[in-house]
Length: 156
Image (cartoon, rainbow, N blue to C red):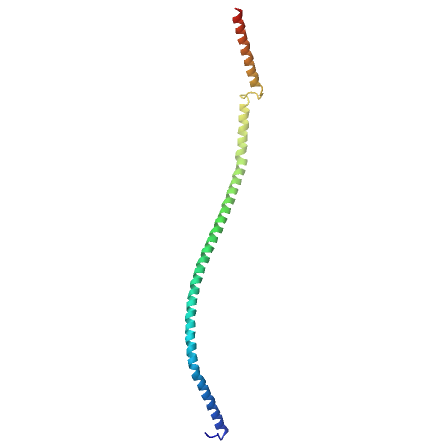
């Protein structure tokens, strides 16, 4: 080929050379792009499979989390209900005790005092030697009578 005679021709020749180099590089890029495309499709399929497995694991995790949370809520609710019931029982016992002490206890004490006052004359003295003294007197009397009977029978 001949050498370019003008700068314009030189620029065009240079541009054509660069264009040829660029076309060669583009042609080499086709198979690489094909391989990249296949790899990208495979990666996409793998990613879809991994996302599907991840969704499954996340669903399982979600259900387990819901189950654990529900059990904890039930447990805490039961504990709170037990505390509330115990507090109510204590309050009701305290109120009943106060009401008994204010309303019933004085009436019962007055009734007991009146019954003790009425029963006092019917009760024997609280002398603890009196029963023994009675038994001793009965024994002595019995022995004396027995001795008297024996003496009378002997004297006849």
